[in-house]
Image (cartoon, rainbow, N blue to C red; front, side, top):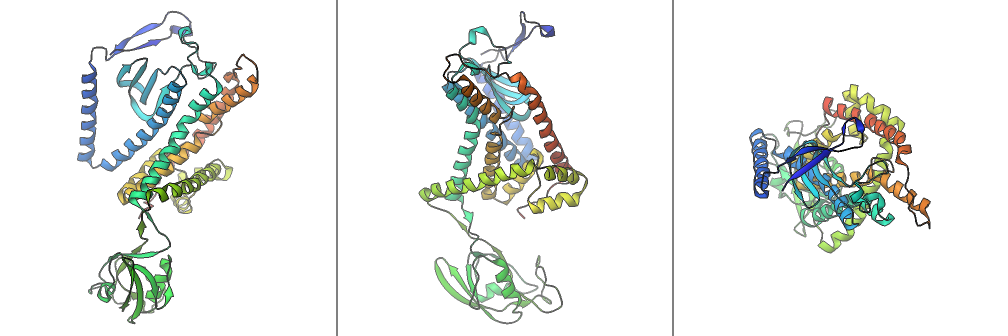
Length: 442
C-alpha cells in the first residue's frame, strides 16, 4: 500500500504540484505491522530497564485518550459522508504510516497529541474540485455540528465508562466511616490495638460511647486523651459489631513512627494503627445512576476551574509561582495551581503508584476537563467550529444557498486567543519544571 503526499507549487503559486516520494510504498502491510510491533517492544523494554514503566503507562493512556477524541471526529465525518485524508498520532515528519482507502493512518515524530484531517473545515482552505460536495463546509448543519462536538462527546463517554468501572469493580472510599487499615508497633511493644483485639479492616463505630462516623480527628483525639487508660472501642467487622478494650501507650515514652505529637509535654495515647476509609463497590445498575450524578459534580468543578484559570488574579498569581516555590506549594495546597502536561503526567504517575482507583479517577478528571475545555467557543478549539456552524445556520435561515462565514475575519481573535493560551500554559509549564508539585496521594 503506497502512501503519497503532494506539496503546493513554490512561492504560493497555484499550479502543478510537486510529487513527494511515497512513504512505505515498497512495504507490505505485514511488514509495516511487524515494524510497529517491534518498535513498541523496544519502547517497553527500555521503560522496564530504566524504571519508567509507570510513566510509559501514563503517556500511553493520554495518547489513547487523545486519539479516541480524534476517532470521534473521524467516525462523525465518515457518518456525514465527508472525506477524511489523515488520521495520525503525533506531529511533524512521518515515522510510520499506511493507507487504507482514501485515508492515511500513521505515527509522526513528536508525540504531542494527534489529529484527523477533514478537508474544507473553513472557507480559507483550498480543496480539490473533485472533492466538492464531500468536504466539511459543504455538508448540512447537523453533520458539521456532529463532527465538531464528537471529540468532547467521546471524552464524556470515556469518563462515564471509567467511572462506572471504578464504582463497580474497584470501589471508592466511604468518607463517612473510619477504618483500621493496618497495625504497627509502638516503641518496643506490639500494637496495643492488636493486643486488644482490633484487626485490620475493622470499621470504628464508637470510642467510650462517642460515635466516630467518618471523623478521623475525633477518633485520634479520643485515643490521645487516654494514655495508659483502657478505652472501650466498638467496631464493625464483617457486618457484625464487636466491643474491644484497648489500653493506649504513652506517646511521650513510646514513640510511633510518623505520629504527630500534640503540643506540650502532657502524656498522650497511641494504639499503633493506620487509618483510612473503607473502599466500597456498587452494583452495576446502582453504579449507572451514581455515575451520572458524580460526573455532573466533576463537570461543574471543571467549569468553575476553567473560570478560575482565566481570571486576572489567577493569571498574575501564576507568574508569581514560577519564581517562588512557596507560592507554588501554597497554590497546590489550596487546589488553585494550574498544571501543564508535565504536571498532569507527574500527578497521574503518582496516582498510578497509589493504586488503580486513584489512577482511574485522574483519567476521569482529565477526560471531563478536556471535554469541557474543548467546547470553549473559540478557534482552534472544537467549540469554535460549533459556534461557526451555529452562526452559519442562523445566517442561512430558509435560504437554499448555504451561508459560509468568512473565517479570515476571525483570525485576529484566534491568534489573540492562542497568545492568551500561551500566557496561561508557559508559566504553568515552568512552574511544574522548576517547582514540581508534591505527591497528593501520600
